[in-house]
Image (cartoon, rainbow over all chains, first blue to last red; front, side, top):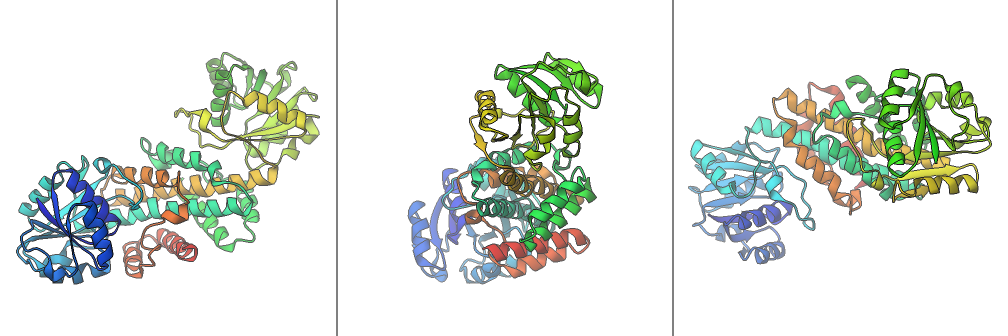
Length: 253
Length: 253
């Protein structure tokens, strides 16, 4: 298929590469920042376009991979109202695209992307939704060679999935950052807990997380919890996070 | 070396096996629950002992791998006050063993253990401390074949390390559990976010966590944050955790 990519961020970059590897052609790349469009276009052997209104009207699919709050603005400028337009957002409903085309959909890759870090798209869950069965069929065909892990979910389910991912990924990474800061404060290296982080993630690949919960709160070990809160006496924010999450563990276990 | 293992939990089990693999002999296993002592002893070709006062006086090292709050009780019962006694706790100081032997120390394996899940001990950071240089030398010799990742830290540093591990491992696993519950509530499978969990842990193996933070809070995307809080309106505890961690991300980024 011939694809126009609108956006040049992490999702546009990784999805564009994966689609190209799967045999599709990225014909054009547009981005609010033309320099970024040029960088991505060059890596995809595509053309960079400076103005949305100048993008090709002949492509099969227009992928809007931009911040949630400008999806509608970009969609409004696409000069191809009979063509398939999709967005890639977890927390935005499909309906946002309805005013701009008769055929629209969503393709949400559930992964945390960094431009500098390559990922294996085959394992990434691709969550899709279409305005019709025809659209869903086209999307399925498009990603057949991209991922082994494709799911058809509606917008409400996708929103919950995105929220769950914030807990399991964004918040988790922040806890790594807080741990890193604590260690730095005492001249200890983050290397010390890197193996533990790997193992904690590995354990839940084949187990239910609640069944492998360990630590003082899981044992309701009040003495250790109090010692930790005392250690955090100069970090009121960390104290509050420690208390709230420990209580939540006690409630769940 | 000839080792007596006091305790039969996750740490005793995995450390016992790793020490045996490294060529040491576990001569005896004692546990408060004799049946557990028998199970571990049998897997280590050791003898199970029912009463602490009956353990061998001839071993080289006595490893106390029990809950923090009974370390002193167990140490008090070891009938070998001139022998090396060590505990395996992250949050307990070395001094707790001083009344019970002239030679004492700590060997804290920084990992999350489950009895049913095998781990590669070679990669596990082993944090140690000795009452003297002689003791530290003996401990280093003992673990030479056990781990490539050995660190000498004092009790204060070890306490901070343990606290950081609670954030990066115990709390992280709990966030996985909360995500799992959210998904279950909407008939979605945890399989959807397992690849994301793996990637989130993988990313910080070679990056600073704060440098790879993603998500609505990292972008200070208030619209998405508000949508998520609205989705959590029937889960006040999750709402509170979401708010606190999002604010903490905003503060750090």
